[in-house]
Image 1 (cartoon, rainbow, N blue to C red):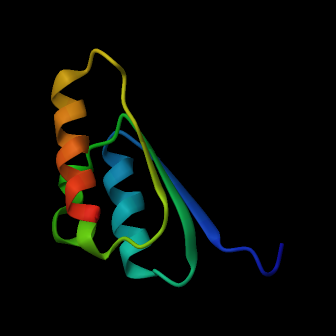
Image 2: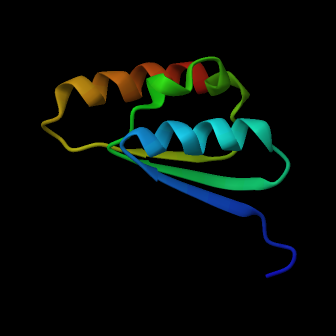
Amino acid sequence: TRNLRIGYFGSSTGGAAALVAAAELPQQVGAVVSRGGRPDLAGAALPKVQAPTLLIVGGEDDIVIELNEQARDQMR
C-alpha cells in the first residue's frame, strides 16, 4: 500500500472539503467520492481537482443535483 495514492470521501459539506483537499495535493490524491455533497462550497478549488471524481446524489434531490452538475462542468 506504500505506493498507493490517497482517496478522499466526503458527505454533505464534507464533499466540498474532500474536493478542496484534492485540489491542494493533486499528485497525491488518486480519487474523490462525494455523496450528497455540496461541491459548490469548494469554489475556486474545483478547476484544480485532477483526480477522478464520483459525484453521487439522490435522484429526487433536484437542488443538489443542479449544484453537482455545475461543479462537474467546472472540473472539466
